[in-house]
Picture: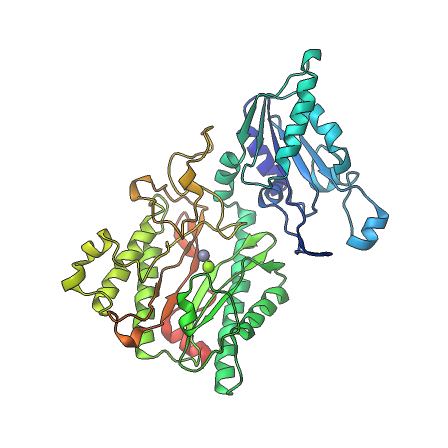
Length: 463
Ligand code: MG
Ligand code: ZN
């Protein structure tokens, strides 16, 4: 049985009698005039089918019966846009029970849905399905007088699917490890290219390093970057959502690269910060060592049964100790480490959270708090799907427990903007160190560590 079949059967087992799930894939998106963005399938749809073509919809009922709607074979279209699997081949290739042309969906879907009571669909999935669903429900309702059962409840399939996707299966873990390996090679390539270019006194811009990253991703079979790469030289590292732009990289700068490839639908997410010329200065070393210690504390706190917030809290504590000992905060004004943590005095230097789930989406689905399990039929609490890196509202008691098979990032940082209250030698230093952690029965495995992180290892690599 394929992993996709296993997931569909598990999903079916979570449904009530008379329930059906609709999972559409993503629409194609126009970029400008006749050119489109590169097509990316919907993550929920791909998770259940492994099918990459647009214009497809999966139906699945509580008995595990599946219907797929997909693009019909069409020689003319295939000459222009490429091969289509077609409904004739779909049952054999994708192990679905029946398949029809997507052009027939408005006729066939109402008949299929009409025999069910509750319809699930991913509320966080492609929104285009909603008006279609309303159309079909209207069709079914018209036939109610002739004895057709009308579905009476709509439920959010994300409640089940998010919990499933949160625990990675063997198939997913293998791909994620490969994705991380490719990204690690790309980071190494960019670091070495950077040091060489500085040494040879070549003109070097941020986008030159981005080009090295993209070349390495693609060379190893990655389809896309998992997100827009950040390559930030010097002070730009203090801009959290900076892109790889055109600023020059010069000797003496630190360079922050946050980049990861997507491989077969799975993201990797790695950040390294390194000296452009291959040697850390004293102040750069101070800040880097503090962030690295904070990450080590986070790694130690990343274990099954620990709270999701524990790695963050562990990182914050170490960062606060560092801010005090380096003179970025001072005890007279800001008090003890406890005071600094309690009153969040560290936020001018550390304003994001330490972890997010990682999977098919770089900020992957799944609740960060308790009480939103797959068994709940109530909608997710509104705060549970906020970007955890932006919010600081999740307090420790609500944080959910970590489980074997989860993958999350560990990414503490310090970002020091010029300010009269900060020693000048630290101005404009921005450091983040990010690795991807898989929870295992033995503890935790950092699957992104094929690129070095220790100061001496980075300097050796770049020499
Ligand atoms: Mg990142
Ligand atoms: Zn991240």
